Length: 409
Image (tube, rainbow, N blue to C red; front, side, top):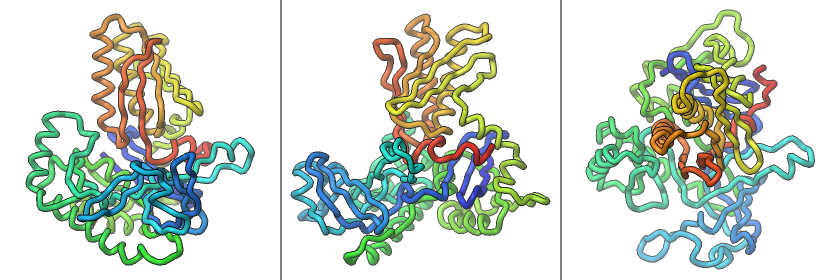
């Protein structure tokens, strides 16, 4: 797999390619005001009893919302209590200062009436985590555990054995990519993340809200999400990007430092020159269309609405069985949902299942391919109308929201 780092209008882009095919895309648009994972020393502005939530001043410019369920606080004996048992007004008051982390990213919408109603205040949490390549350090968790996204019994058993060897550590979540790593490397990464949190404590003081640490950028998210894949090279065009990649990799991925390769593109002055050079801009443009053509002749229609995303599988000129088309569509749908970063409720109208066995095979295929998704995806089965229902949690706005389509056309 190749990782490409590029720039567009001051925004950072990172792409993952497998044999020239786009398999990952992360973007940090310059208009983003709150990045997912950023940590703030925030001030409580108001308490909303109806929402059981608090509105916080994050940095003097942006407001976040903290729901009661996302409160964490130390209690007697060093234990950590979760919010929700009592109304939020009994835990927090206006003027209180708290350390929080952005659970969702925020970009201001265009200034029109519709956009204003659709703008969302970023959600924040006191359950602060620091992302590594193979594990996550949870500042407000005392035990160790495995990522809830790991469903395979054999893999969970293997990772649990590794977890037992890390019993002297605390507050870590092992990712699936940790399965192929030596325990010493996991200890090293855990110690780095814990030390970063320790050094942050000095900044969590005072009466003024402030940004303490930016969340992972597009490149860092990409490498963390692709930690389980074999990366052949990391291509960059500018020395700034080379230094950025080298700095992060030297800490979290020393094995990748020799694989960072500056690419010279003669006469290139435009943004996304590397993406043009590697001929993937067309693949990105295709992600902005409402349809996808399947290799064997069928197609998939993807319609995003405010409430949910409807996905329709059509046979077109494909003369194969419904099952064959559905299996091919299931793999492509999982890829499109991941690349487009579609979240919330998804309803898929597959071609009619000829038997329960066919339905199970399609579901098994979906379960297999969604394992590569960095966000949690749950398959809920068929609705009464025969639609396959999924839900997908996401960290950042969808690709359509993060891009102005004309920026790459």
